[in-house]
Amino acid sequence: MRFAARGSLLRALHYRNYRLFFFGQGLSLIGTWTQYVAIGWLIYRLTGSTLLLGAVAFFNQIPTLLFAPFAGVMADRWDRRNLLLWTQALSMLQALILAWLVLSRQVETWHIMALSLFIGTVNAFDIPIRQSFVIQMVDRKEDLGNAIALNSAMFNSARFIGPSIAGVLISTLGEGVCFLLNGLSYVAVIAALLAIRVAPRQLPGKKGPIWGEFREGMQYAYEFKPILGVLLLLSVFSIAGSPYLVLMPAFAKDVLHGEAHTFGFLMSAAGIGAVSATLVLASLRRVHGFISLIPAAVAVFSVALAAFALTRTFALSLVFLYAAGVGMMLQIACSNTLLQTVVDEDKRGRVMSLFAMSFMGVMPFGNLLAGSIAGVIGVPNTLLLGAACCLAGAGIFVSRLRELKAMLQPVLARLDACPTADGKECPAPTSSASPP
Image 1 (cartoon, one colour):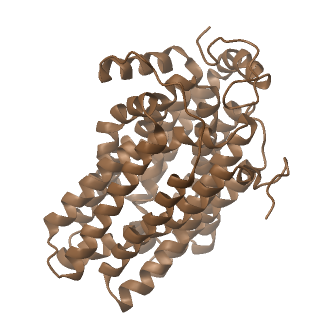
Image 2 (cartoon, rainbow, N blue to C red):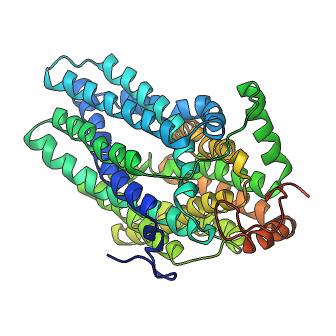
C-alpha cells in the first residue's frame, strides 16, 4: 500500500511511525466510543437519573482543566512516547476494572463515578502529550496538517463504529463486554507505541518548578497574539457553542417530537459534517490561510446552529447540523494545526495543554450553563444565544485579523524555509514563534 504521493489525502501515512500510531489508535478509539455509550447506558439503567448522567460527563471532563498544565510541562520535559505508554496502560486498567465489576455484578454507582474521574484525569495528561507527539512522527511540517486532519477523521469514524458495536453488545451480552472490549483494544495502541522509533528530542537540562514552567508557557502564548486569539476563540466556542450536543436529546424529543432514532440521526448528521471537513483539511498543504479560515468556520457554525434552532422540520435539521459539524471541525482542526505549526518545540507541550484547557477544560461549565439556561428560556432559545455568542467572538477575532496576520507573516516565512519538523534545514536559529 502506497501513501507517498505529496498531494494524497493519505500522505501522512507515508511515515512508518505515524502509520503505526494511526491504525493502533484507530482500533483503540473504537473501543473508547463503545465504552462511552455503554457507561451512559449502565448508569441510567442503575439509577434512572439524568442528573447522574451529567455528573459522569462532568467528572470525565473537569480534570482536563485542573491537570492539563502539569501534563504540558511533562510533555516538554520528558519523552512523550514513554508518557503515552503510561497513559494508555492506565486507560486499559480502568476499562478492565470496570469490566470486572460489571461482569461480576459488583458494580455500584460510586464505582462508576470514581472510575470516570480516574479516566478523566488520565485523559487530562494524555491529550496534550498525544497532540504534541504527532509532530515527532511526521518529518515534514507541510504534512502536519494532513496528519491532524487524518486524526480527526479517525476520531469521527470511530464515533460511528463504536456506538454501533455497543448497541449490539449491550442488547445481547450486556455492558460488561463493552468495557472488556475497550480494555483489550488498548493492546493495539500500546503495541504501536512500542514499535514506533522516533529521533530523541533535546530535553531541557535544568528543570525549574512545574508551575513556573507552565506560567512561562502562558506568558509565551499571551505575548504571541495569534496563539492567544486562537485559544480565546476556541474557549468561546467550547462554552457557548459545543453544548448544543448535550442539548440534542431534548431538542429531538421536545422540539422535533422524535424518538431515540431521531436523536441518532441528528448526531450522525453532525458527525458526517465533521468527517467531511477533515477530508477538506487533509487535502490542504499550507497553513497560511488558516488564521482567516478559523473565524469563517465559527461563523458557518453559528449560522447553521441558529438555523437549526429555528427549524421544526426533521430534514432541514439534518442539513443544518451537517453544516454545523463542518464549521465545528474546521475550527478545531485548523486551530490545532496552526498552533502546532508555529509554536516553539520547547514549549509545544505547554501550548497544547492550553489548547486542551481551552477546548475540553472549560466545556463542562458550558454544558452546565446551557442546561441551566435551557430550563428557563427553552432549548431553541439557548441554542440561539450560544450561536450569537460564537458569532460575536468570530467578529472580534476578525476585527484583529490584520494585526494577527502581520505577526504570523515572518513566522510562516521562516517555516517555508524550514520544511522538516526537526529543524535541520532551518536557515536561522531564532525561535519560530517568538513575539516580535
